[in-house]
Length: 405
Length: 139
Image (cartoon, rainbow over all chains, first blue to last red; front, side, top):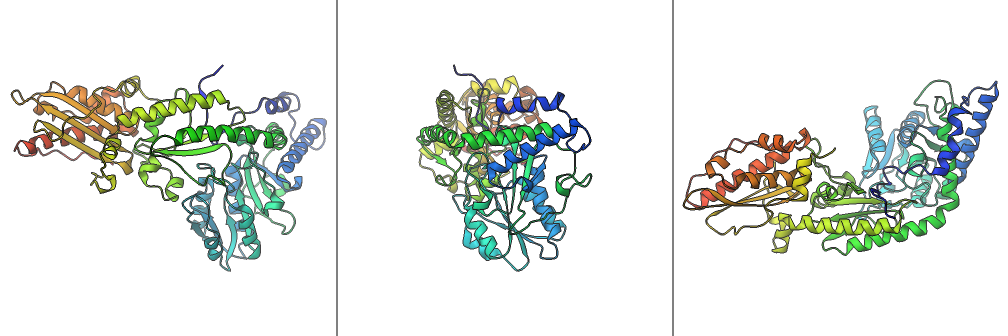
C-alpha cells in the first residue's frame, strides 16, 4: 500500500531507523548518567555507552575510536576543523583552499577566517561538478595549511576524487579536511585509504538522530591538532567541551553500525530505484541531469526541467511528495542555487531544478508514483509557460530583451 | 511556507490560460519579468472596438504558485472592465485577495506591470499615446 506523503528529501535529513531509536531509548530515562561522572554507576554506564558508540562510529570510517570528536552535528564539526586548524597552525601559514560548491557551513566559516586575517582561495568546479586537480595543485602556496573539499555534494551528489586530492595535499605537506556529511554511511569511506586528515559528518543524514555529529581528527602520520572552539570541562580530549549527548551518541553509533553492515546490499537497491526515476524523468523533453553521473552518490538525482520554475513545479505535488528545489523565489533571495550556478548552469536552468534524495525506506511504488506526478506537473506547467511556447515557436530566449527588475 | 487556499485554487485550476493573436489590432500583449529572475508573465487583453471593454484576457506564466495565481486572478478581473478601469488595478488588491505573504508581493507587482504593459501595447497599436505609469518594480 502506497502511503502519502512520500519523503524524497533525504539529503536534508533522514528518518531515524527504528533500530536506532530502540538503542537510544534506555539512555533517556534509565541510563541517564553524565559520561563525565567518574564516581558512580550512572556515570560508568553512560561512559561505557559512549565508548561503544565511538567504536561503532570509528569502525564505519576505518579509524581509531580516539580519533573521533563528538560534536552537535556537521556544522559544528566543519567550524571546529576550519577554525581549529587555522588557529592551531597559525605559525605555519594562513592560507586555506576550498571550492565554491561547498556547504554554507564551510563557506561561511571560511569567510569568518578571512575576517580574522586568513586567506582563502575558492576554486571553481568543472561543468560536471568535479574539481580540476591541476587547478587545485596550482593554488597551493608556501602559506597553505589546509585543503577543504567536501566528499560528496549535498545538492547534486557528485563525489570528488578524494584519494587524488589527499595525495596532492600530502605531497605539499598540507592538511586535508573533507566534509563527509552526505557520503558517510552511503558509500564506503575509509579515512586511511582515502588519506583524510580531518572529516566532519553527522548522524541525521544516515538514519540517526539530529543534534549529534563528529569530527575525525587524525592522530598518526601526521598527528593533527585543532584548537578548541568551545571551552569548558575539557571533554573530547580538550577539543570540544560540553556534556556528551549520550543518547545521541548511542544512536549515532547504532546508525553507523547498520550502515556498515547493510550498505552494500542497500546501495544496489537504492541506486536501481534512483536510476529508474532519473531515466523516466530524463525522457521528458528539455530535461537535464545535473552533475557527473558516474562519480555520484547512489541515492541522489538533480534534474532541471527547462521552462518550468522549480517552486511552481513542487507546488504541483508537494502535498504528496517532498523534494527540494534549487530555486528560491522570494523577494529576499531571488538567487537560485549557487551550487548549480557554479556548474555553469544559467539562472533559468538553476531555477528549474529539483533534487530527489532517496533512502533505505524508499519503495518502488513511491518511485512510480513520483515519476507520474512530476511528469504530469511538468507537462501541465509547460502548457502554462510563455517560455515553453516561445521555445516551441523557435524563438531563442537569449535573444529576447527581458525587462529586468 | 504554506500557500493560501486561493493561491492553491488558482494554481490547481488556473483561469484563462492561453494565447490570443498578438498580431490582431484589438489585442494588447504584456510580457514582463525575466527567466533569470525565476518569473516571466505574459498577459493579453482583447478589447471590443465598439465599447472599449476588455472582452477576453489570457495569460501564460513561468514562475512559482503565487506568480501563476496572481496572473490568473488578473485575467479574471480584467474581463468585462474598460481599459480605463483596468489600468487602475493595483498590486495590493491582488495581495489582499490572494493573501500573499511579504516575500511574494513581487508576484503581484509583476501582474500589475503585465496589465499595464498589455494596455500600452494595445494603445500603441491603435495610435494612442502610451499611459504613463508610476514605476513599481521591487526587484
